[in-house]
Length: 407
Ligand SMILES: Cc1ncc(COP(=O)(O)O)c(C=O)c1O
Image (cartoon, rainbow, N blue to C red; front, side, top):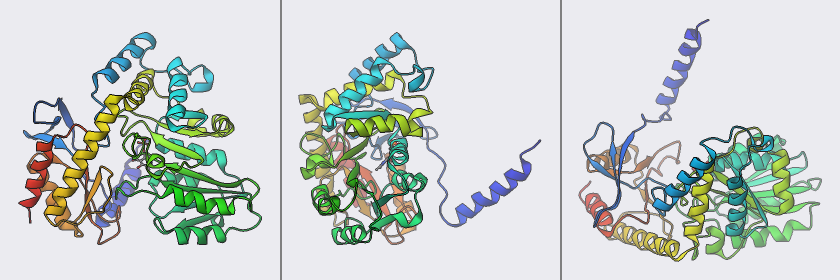
């Protein structure tokens, strides 16, 4: 047998993606990490270039990925238990580190219990499989992350059991709630905490208040869920994310260990009954190997650091560098979306100019991502900058200087 006929069809599909402007560029490869030194934050060497790059497209907001204590914790766990779990959780693939991380992240999120997954992506899908039945109605923000959209799609509910509200538009959320059929028993309202392409946040306090008014009308009530992958660890006074920033907690929190915590993996934090239901019903939890003990040990250490003076200092640096960068853009008269989050979009509003600016920055040793249609609507073409706690003041000034010389 040969795959040549399939290869021919796939080649046509790939060509179509390219024509539509939807294909991804080749992946750049990092070949070396250079630790921070004096006025210089971490640098990266890339295959095919002699530059040493500042990375302004990493989600590792607190710069914990290379923290010596995380590396030591991962090392120690690996030496004790090996590199892989050998089985799924319910067939004796559960190690002490999985249990400890679940307890630690539940405490961090201020919820009674938590379950860990291989990613936030699979957490969203697993939660949808757990909560959905024919009498469930899902409502989501128009700009929700792909993992939430996918989760709503695989939840096997009829098409009419879904509502989408305009981005952060509370009047439209009310419209969606008002349109739910009376025979529905359970409403799920789900939204990103921080919208990753824009750096703005969901007003959880207002969403909770609106949902509360509809709660008594439905048998299982209105359940609010935030996916705070970009907020957890990086936002709010204590780094607890968008709930911290809004001073309001939704019923269920989804997060990742792969961004501010600098490791890998995802979690759901909620009531004990919801978490036990996840354990029994979420296929993306049940039928796949869990995180390695190394990932878990490093994630536990990352949360401990977030909760310490060191973590608060990192958060302070992150906020200072973010403010410095945002002020720099303002000084140059560049358009952005206001807010304190370290995702800072530069609105270019033109596709070729976005590509040119990404290349210009790359040629001068700066890694960023350009967002063009269909990732963002036409006219909203953007360069997304992501600040992290180990960028130095000199790093930020260098990038601002570069931006001032591009036209
Ligand atoms: C809101 C949201 N959810 C989920 C993810 C995926 O996180 P993970 O890499 O843990 O699957 C992302 C980031 O890409 C995100 O922005």
